[in-house]
Image (cartoon, rainbow, N blue to C red):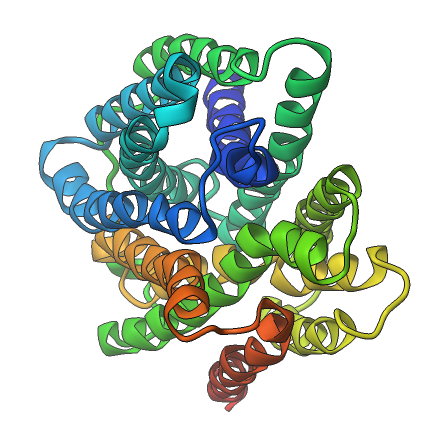
Amino acid sequence: MKGKIATLYLLGLIQGISFTLIPGASGFLVSNKGFGLTSSQYGELFIPMIICAVLASFFGGAIAKKWGIRKVSMVSGFFNCLSMVVFALSALFIKNGFFPLLICLSFLGAGFGANISTLNSYVFEFFPKKPSAALTALHATLGLGTAIGPLLFQFSLEKMQWWVAPLFLALGYLILLFFTWVKFPSSLHFSSSGSEGSSKRVWLFCSIALLYGICETAIGNWSVLFLKMTRNVPLQEASFSLSLFWASVTAGRILAAILAMKISPYFIYISISFILIASLLLFDFSYFLWLPFVMAGVGCSAFLPLTVSFGQKQDMRHAEMISGLIMAIYMCGYGIAAYGIGWIQSALQFPLASLFWMLLIPATLLAVLVGSVALQKCK
């Protein structure tokens, strides 16, 4: 059992690292010393990633239900490994690297979508008594990886060669592919006894996942460029601020996992929605860069794992498919922010300085939906 749990959480960790490696490299990608991408091109990079992630998440759950979840996990690991190899090889075409980066992010999207969907379902098999806490802990490990990603790229860029970072991750995926095959069960078996709602309510949690994906991605993908272009913050300090955000996401998830053992996770759900709104109000006014990033990280922390957990509990007979559906909708939100902000900025001359004011709209809607979930649970 220990081997299964170790493999589960290590897969979450390395997935988080690879997921933020390219956003953490955004300053290098758009610089003349790097790939020389425009802001529009940088946003377009995430289009194939989103499409592949949505498809892998949506169909991955159904395929896992029919053909076995371990096969989907193995395929996801292979795609993730391939994405890191392509990213490293793009160093050979650095001045014409837009197309290789598109391929890299396509593989990464497919790997991420399938991997997270299956890991979410494994949690219910390995931790049937405390799934919400265990799932939050898994996403805390994922969050730890997302905090490491920008730092790993920056370290490789300054101390070695930048392409060492993706090659290191590719090797990690190869090792974990072996342990996935050896340790994980080929299929999962859930009963309907854990169901506590209606399958129709799953769409409420899908709406929450969509809005959360927009908020998290706007901060995670665009905050470095926001600080660099609108507040003239040095690139190294901006990258550190992004890592601080992901570190706070991780710390918040760890705290939420502990608190969920003692208090209602629905109380945590509604509390963090207000923290997220408060953080967005501080980005333009705080002289202390760490404060809004830390608050935003805590505000984002437990949203996704709790949304998946509550959504799956509505109908445990289709837990794998619900996990995949929620992750697919989350990635749609990711795509809206990752590509949409770049398109709006380019086509409509959207000022990047207004980014966090605009995010108050989805964040407020998010708080309203989360509040309705908490109220329904309390009745």
